[in-house]
Image (tube, rainbow, N blue to C red):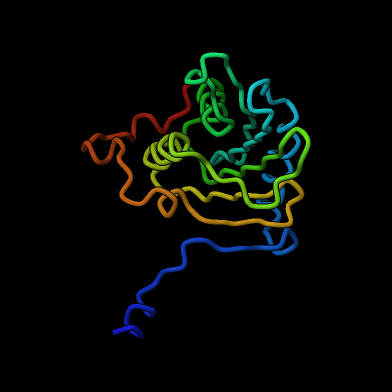
Length: 173
């Protein structure tokens, strides 16, 4: 039975060295790393950058924006989705996330919080396919690649509600 369970085990997270990534993955990580410095983070002093790649290859970037009313804080991933929507983008293939502290580098891969996972799950539903999620430490020495469906198994979204989201796939410029 033990051997059978091991055979059924699916590897959901894959660790990579930066040099092992495809050029498109490296490009997304670099964009997320660059925008990270624009974070407005007076409370946590934690910087996060996110970069989304649209199906047409455009990269949409954003950083986290905090607020004294903590519930109003917007993570970098959700901010990027909002920015992409405002720019007329609705379908994505991948997202990269990088983070650091004000006085320290993060040595583990930074992953999306639960709210961001939920929003990325909905973006995957609208896109019509799973999204690749590239998570990295500050200096990109610890990189994990997965998908949003792996990070949020049994996710709840518009498809769960039986909605036809195909009309939202079109650009709204």
